[in-house]
Image (tube, rainbow, N blue to C red; front, side, top):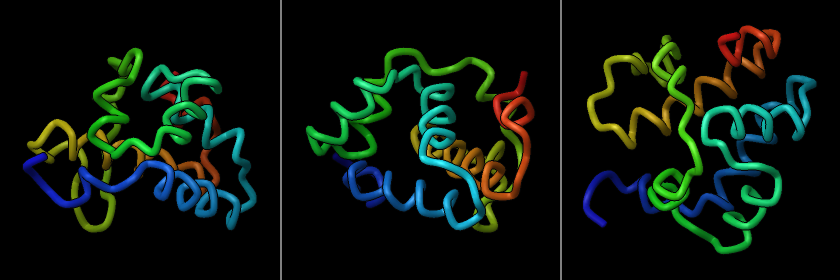
Length: 116
């Protein structure tokens, strides 16, 4: 697949890093799963299936059951990059998940993280 090298990263290798990032700040795997579910529409079985299949990030997002339309309200900076200014749709989605997990790790409430 053409594009940024991150697109071909195995989601099963990225997922534990997201969980660990949250756990270091006292949050839980269940909360990370809730954030992923909100963004992508994957339920617990669907998420585990993608991990078991070893799909890359591009496939993980391409096969997402229902990308949340409210993801466009995710704004802010991740790794020095303003999320709302990212032009590539896949990279923007990857950054959005990273921003959500950052917010989780920073102690924001789930209500605020999930833009309720």
